[in-house]
Image 1 (cartoon, helix red, strand yellow):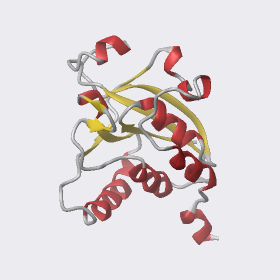
Image 2 (cartoon, rainbow, N blue to C red):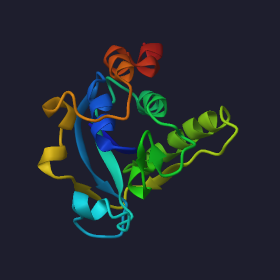
Image 3 (cartoon, rainbow, N blue to C red):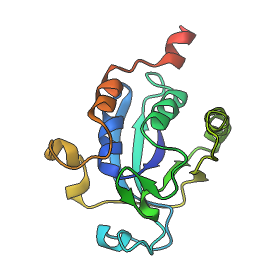
Length: 174
């Protein structure tokens, strides 16, 4: 099992999106790459902690490739928006990819370069090693499973796309 961390605006929808994908084994929402220890949601909402709402995605690389996760991540964000996704604004809603395996960085950089070529504006997606991750409070975990009509900045069609997604990278190798 491998893991990667995605910041894509409000973590409720981002987590629910990735949970739909075959090969994603586990998800957890939390706060990443900030400057304070053990922040709470209330702390992060002050926009002073430096943390981004982030989703830890644990996946089985024999069922889904990192390139597939990256492809889907870019479908779920506006990669040129600075500190804003949907109606949510603030540094905690910035976009970012935080890796734990240095060997993943070249593949992420290559994918980001491909994506950058599609936009006139520069990408606003951070690419950094994961420095810290603090799990969010229990009520944030699996939020949209517990609250199906809860707020989400992502369109429902994205969840259906994620449910139907089949790994292109692994299918091509067979």
